[in-house]
Amino acid sequence: MKTMKKLLAVILAMTLTMAMGICASASSQGGSAAPKGSITVTNAIVGETYKLYKVFDATVSGERVDEGTGISYTSTWFTKTMAATCDYFDVDDSGNITIKPAGKKDSGELSDGAILWLKGQISSFTKIGDSVKATSTTVKWENLDPGYYYIDTTTGSFVTVDSITPNVNVEDKNSLPSHDKKQATAADGTFGDDLLELNIGDTVYYQTEIKIGKGSDKDITLTDTMTDGLDLNQSAITVTKGGTAVDAANYTLTPSAHGFTLTLKESYVSELNKDDVIIVAYSAVINSSAAIDSATGNSNEAKLEYSEQKATDTVYVATYDFQLFKTDGSAENTYLPGAKFKLYDALTGGNLIKVNKDNTGYYLDATADVEIEVNSADGVNVRGLKPGTYYLEETHAPSGYNKLTERKPVTITSGQTTAHEVYVENHAGAELPNTGGRGTTLLYAIGAALVIGAAVLLIARRRTEQ
Image 1 (tube, rainbow, N blue to C red):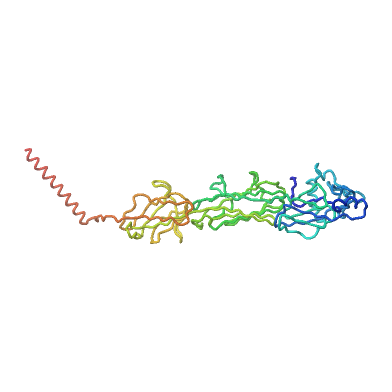
Image 2 (cartoon, rainbow, N blue to C red):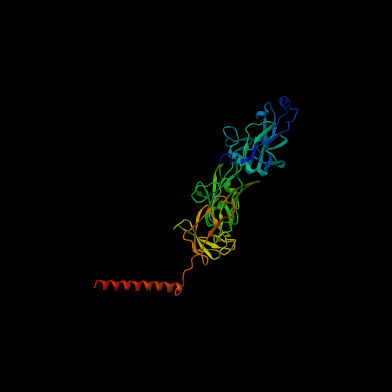
């Protein structure tokens, strides 16, 4: 059993006396009832609900009530029959309740077992006043009779005090579960909170760490929400603790195209210790709907809910684009239709970066192999690129223009907020003569003349030699 397993419901041993200085004489004379007192919870959690219960009645007498002497506890619900099977409390023939050895620690505080046993009897306790929803870090009950009190909260923790005073201050030592959302470019990569800049089609790997708080014993729900530009790999969500898979019976999981809801069950959470860490790992693929040129357009938000508390942690990925224009290189920069390109990652050789086409333009798609065609004076958009230098290779030049002999570099800049503009120029080519035209005839005539001239020279040389 974990130490202080339920941290935030309280066993308060409390006896209330008359005002300081007169309590002893008044009690010893038996002429006055014990004074009213108060219980104040400090370090309360704003938004949580606190409930006060009276466990046992207390009769106060003697001179040192503030130290727990002269006190007898009774109860209408805790009977000798119950005491016979209870390891922590006993009751004598007069109805006086005492604590068994297993019910306390060496320090005198209630043992963890006694605390848990009392929690199971809460339905038998007398609720004092209304529930209090904390609006500050202090919750207080006043005008209380002497007794053994129990404070229950929606966070499910316990706190004990080892002294009995008329006015008791109890610190809520509960700590809420927390979470940390991180991302990386590889399943075994370095996870962090920084923005990732990637290509459409790349996989983003996520880890959300859920750290258990002290006294956590209720459902913990993690809701992960992705934008439309991220497709969740629904079959690849894992839940582990200390590197070992958590039994699926301990949680519920509901995935969707762009996120999931995971709930760690109360029965499982209550068995965990403070600072235990549950890791939820999953991944998503950047798709063609991804926001372009935006540091926050493609988000993944993890929201953790526990009791009345909610907290969110968000990470982001970004991808970029360029706008390709085809012109003639003139002063007017006249648009040229009909050019086609392919995209590579090197000036020569390298890898082909495959693209597909939609109504917006072209986007990276490793399953397609479409040529990028420019048929508008407004150019054409190519999107889904991480920062770096890419190279356009012209595969088809506009009619009447020379095709480029080398690839054109394109630079994508980290953090750019608008499309990088790329102008590719083509220049008009010299007209080559057609087969069978005047140009060919002229070439033939010149060739024939050269052959005839060579023959004449050869004949003349032979005659000279004779």
